[in-house]
Figure 1 (spheres, rainbow, N blue to C red):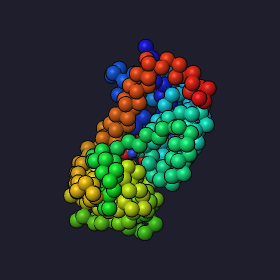
Figure 2 (figure 1 turned 120 degrees about the vertical axis):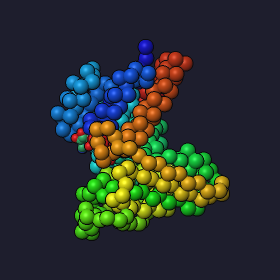
Figure 3 (figure 1 turned 135 degrees about the horizontal axis):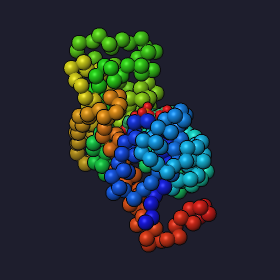
Length: 283
Ligand SMILES: NC(=O)c1ccc[n+]([C@@H]2O[C@H](COP(=O)([O-])OP(=O)(O)OC[C@H]3O[C@@H](n4cnc5c(N)ncnc54)[C@H](O)[C@@H]3O)[C@@H](O)[C@H]2O)c1
């Protein structure tokens, strides 16, 4: 049976959630390579899920796979995409703030026919945003509410000396565009990046971040206006079972993207069995 070969770059929480999903056996994919800056994390994943995967450096991992999943950190995104272009591999980028800092690479990947998949992450409504863009949007706003502990350590709060540990009512800690949000909260605001990439772009997507001591879940509200009318979505996220800082829906969105790509690949191999060799020969 044909299986889509996966490399995981960053073997933490999302990497583990992908392994759990693959264990169920209904996605035609297998993990063939693991890379993590901390090799013990790759080893742990390999041991825990009994993977028949190589633990290797970034380039080797990318070269071994059909599809690369980046689930590490924003600073690694540039090298991951460059490696995917070099070896002509499609990829899924989870650390989306790293993508906003490298918009030129999205264009370069397109020119090289490399698909960069952008997960919907922890928000709903991106299908409508994408459709609405066909006739234009003139206003897109994301309002994110998080418990204070989910925002602690963010560069913006440290730099501005904003202490949210003792607040007892909601406090708006940031208002700006998605570019500024990604820079100020690189690990907390992937959803703003996804919304901007599906919609009007990072400069024109407005982001408001509220630290709210009265909530336990992360909440994301999307509001958009355009030629189509208006849309409003609210997503209330439970944390990932193994990482309270991450929303479970984000991991599930990675799995859903992988499923689409793997099923597409298997179907393609059925009808065009020479696809693999074409890829290898850079055709
Ligand atoms: N798109 C979304 O909606 C969304 C949602 C949640 C998290 N994320 C992002 O996905 C990424 C992974 O999240 P997670 O919850 O699995 O984090 P995690 O901390 O559990 O795992 C990250 C792993 O990456 C490894 N790593 C760190 N720097 C690396 C580097 N330079 N090269 C290789 N590996 C490196 C770490 O050692 C760790 O094992 C983060 O960047 C996070 O911000 C995106």
